[in-house]
Length: 228
Image 1 (cartoon, one colour):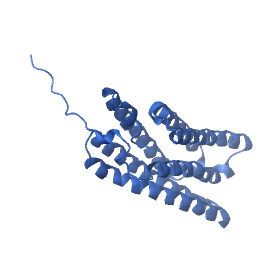
Image 2 (cartoon, helix red, strand yellow):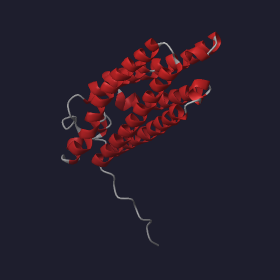
Image 3 (spheres, one colour):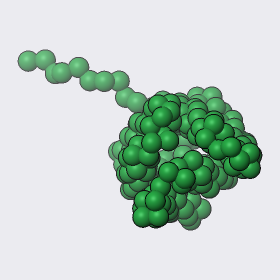
Image 4 (cartoon, helix red, strand yellow):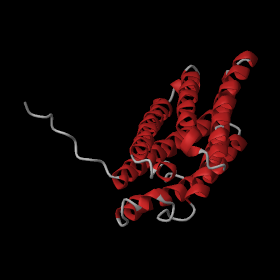
């Protein structure tokens, strides 16, 4: 009998490339999503103040997203120039990775106020409390992830927090889909769902990094943390 063909081993550098490209796709979907929300706010409200506030929030978000995008673009090239052993340390990482990530997570969380602005006029008091509760839950997930990264606990708690974040994001999208103002603009829901799919793929890619790390006990403590 013949052994079944085996897939070629995946290198740490290839996993870095996978995580980076997926994260960039996630950022692109979110950029479009927030732009659609701002366009809808401008179309719905005769009051220019609402649109002005939305644009200001979007401008701040895009600045942080672009900073994170620059960091992510640099990761695969840097990873390809060092040995696999070097990838087990933090030495190869470009500076500012952690700060760019945590700052973006914080701005993303704050930018969810755009969705509240967009839908609040269509909700009765009970519906508003329910929707704002879903938003608060999602923001709490972001805060937990930022704390985890800052305390260098991503290697032990990061994956479970990312999965919880993905669950809360899907719950948020389900709540958003019930509001007529979001239903009127398919791009809002389509880009939101694309972002959710990219986040799911990113969770799996980071899980692959953890799996590779566990296969090499000497690498396990550090390799799981490369994405910080």
